[in-house]
Image (cartoon, rainbow, N blue to C red; front, side):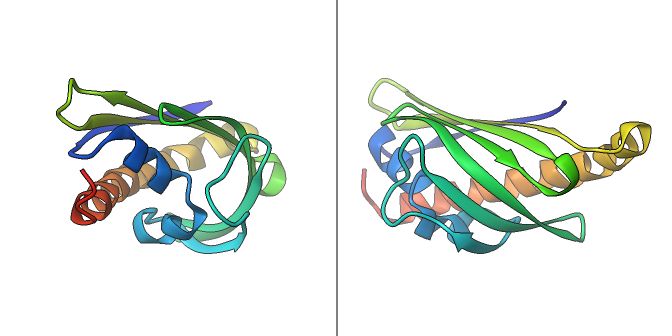
Length: 151
């Protein structure tokens, strides 16, 4: 599996970060690779919920159906996803407090592309594009939460 990890400090309580991360209506405001949210529950996601995103990475559009495996407010969310041709993904969001000085959001995304050696080559291109998109997404998330002034 390919792995992508990022971390960012956000000047807001962990509950505010968690609530933004788990609100499907907010995804389009910070997830740069989301092309469209096709299906989602109303309100914040909970364990057992599913949602479907149309994504665009490295010029390729595809759908991923996500299942919320864990939702432990305000600390952790774990998603597993299935995409086209057997693509699998796992995303883990962890939020830790910084002693009253906001919190840290840690993002982990693991994914497996189909296609054996050819899939691995494509994975390198997607991994490079995904890293830059993850950085942009986390900056947008930070700005979205901090601009709401809810700390």
